[in-house]
Image (cartoon, rainbow, N blue to C red; front, side):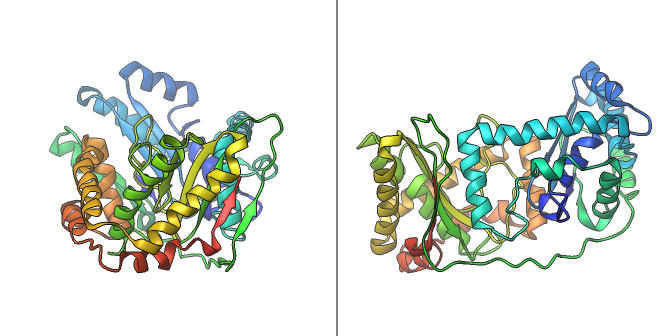
Amino acid sequence: MVIKSGSASDPDGKEGLAWFTANLLKRGSKSYNREQIEEGLEDIGGELDIRVEREVIVITGKTLRDNLDKYYAIFSDIIFNPDFPADEVANLRTDQEQAIRNIVRDDARLCHEAFLYELYAGHPYAHPVQGYLTSAADLTADDAKRFYKKHFVKGNAICGLAGMYSPEFEKQFKNDMNKLKWGSVPDDERVIVRPGEMRVMLVEKPGRDQSQIRMGKLVDYTRRDSIWYTYLAANTYLGQHRESFGKLYTTIRSERGLSYGAYSYPEHFRQSGWSKNPMPLTPFDPQYFSMWTYPKRINTEFSIKMAKHELDQILRYGIDPGELQRFVSFQINHFPFLIETAEQRLLMEMEEIYYNQPDFIENFENNLQAVSHANISDVLDRNWSSDDILIVV
């Protein structure tokens, strides 16, 4: 199940409420308390994952077919009959505080959150999904009930099944999903400022021998736009995530040994587990382009210069047609790994519904093959110009 509301829907002063509400769902329902939920899932080897993004809440369940009825009894009660137990609030607040402090402890995550805080200043994307320590401390079960009532409605949800199940279960699932109260969530008015100059933000953490660097800017495209494929292909050339063939990695890591890695992203990226693949359903609008590297402290300044230089080279000279085709082919050959399992395929198809792109999977290869090297530098310069990038260290 995908709820088309995430942390961007947190009310002012209650940052972290979407995270709080989603995680409180697993703490108790009308028929099961927390211990019964955890033990019930463990007994049948069932999995229940709830993650919160800026624009969505994604609830994913997985179990063996033979245990489907037992599993679904728990899953459906959590979704449709949440209890929001008041006696679990204090424990969840502690967990939420820990989740926020973990961001501060992890230099890479802190750098990324600081980057988003500055890039989306004054916008609902600015605060971490987990909220702030000050706001999270005051969240209550009643706050969660209000968020659930407003956002867990039929016009704001996408539901899906994948794997082995009977026609009878499919019918039951559809009937149950229709139990959600009808409603829709109006779009909020969101204003975002786009400074026309380069900015630098420094976050000081004493005693560090390594720097984390994020560089980037807001862009005017999303996955809904046909031009997105041009940026995807160009980014593969510049700095595909966790690959050693990108220009950033080659220049900064392989040839000069300045950093331990260097990558770029044409849109918001969240890694899926231990894989190199992007997590499905992590939408941003407006989107942003970014570069990430993490050099030794002494190499920080030169690493920034080299990353900016490689970006400027692409904007100035474009990409050789043969090289461009090579990286287009990489993405085409890599795409099947993104829909390899039933769960991956389901999430990708739900992503198609979210973006209103019913043919994204089917036409992915054709749309990438249509990317042309002609005027590619002009196309990239519209959104990737380094003149007004934000640099966070």
